[in-house]
Figure (tube, rainbow, N blue to C red):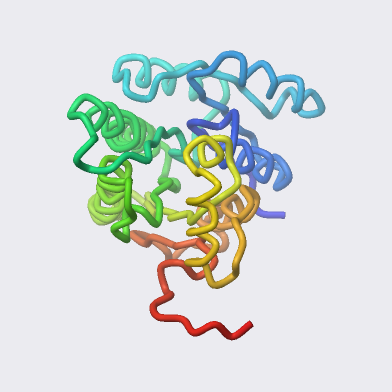
Length: 255
């Protein structure tokens, strides 16, 4: 078992965020689940009754700068120093560029990119005063490749990747590592909402492993990056967990 940690997971009440919380608790860590959906948080309370002293629940809009600062300060005071952060809160769309409104573009940037920045900055300020820590941002293969219908979502995630690199460089001297995970198609509520039967078939053709990933597979990468005993020399990196999607080029049918 790795050393004790206290991690904050935004968007932690469902999908990838929830899988990361579950994996963290399995490591013996403590978790602060921050999510904007109170009903999802209530479901988490029912799921984690076996570890009441190791889980805290916070309703939070990551784009609300003042609320983020208050929440982090309160959690740190009442729950102890925050050693890890996962920015998993996010929204998406699957709309052609020419049909994407500026309002939708701004909304996606506000949550996925600016929200991740606000939380990262506030947690980093806390970590600077407590000997460092690890930040993991959820990017996406859509921030690496020009996937159709992802002009706003992909732009936000490309921004997350660059933000990760900049903050990794600037925070290294404070002992804070900053990395990103770029999931491919993963079986989450957001993906089930965005992907049609036709788009699922297209994804499967493009993924060499020929399947969608599971949230637990993303959680494994995040836990590795959070764990200072295993990833102590890893910072500024984006790890694609995508079944080979970003690697694949022309592929002959070998089945």
